[in-house]
Length: 121
Image 1: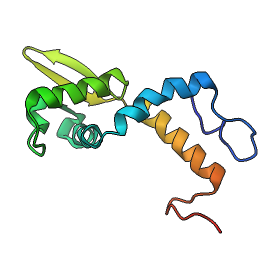
Image 2 (image 1 turned 60 degrees about the vertical axis):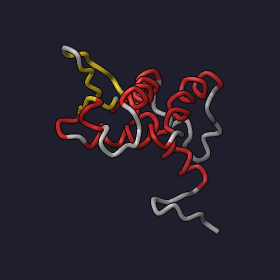
Image 3 (image 1 turned 120 degrees about the vertical axis):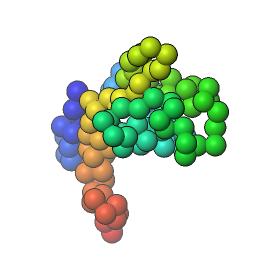
Image 4 (image 1 turned 90 degrees about the vertical axis):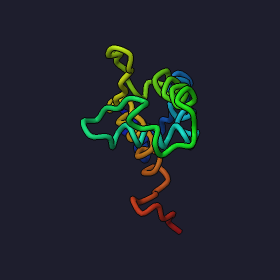
């Protein structure tokens, strides 16, 4: 579901209540700095997937806490997971990120924000 067309300048359409409700959990999950960093770590990990043992180094958090944050990202649809033996591997859900990018890009175009994030006078 692309928001780019719904939020195009002059379209006169915003998000419906259902669309906003569907997107809110992902935005809420990303509002936490640890989860935002974890998503970035998973995305940048070689091969595009990582387990907790691969990405816990830069965090001053316990493995269970990191696992909890990854679970929140999974429940929000931002990562997928696959159990292999005793480890769970996480991969970024690119479709979910594309949907959020479309939403934010559409909102930016509605208010006239350029890529440099400068607000027109």
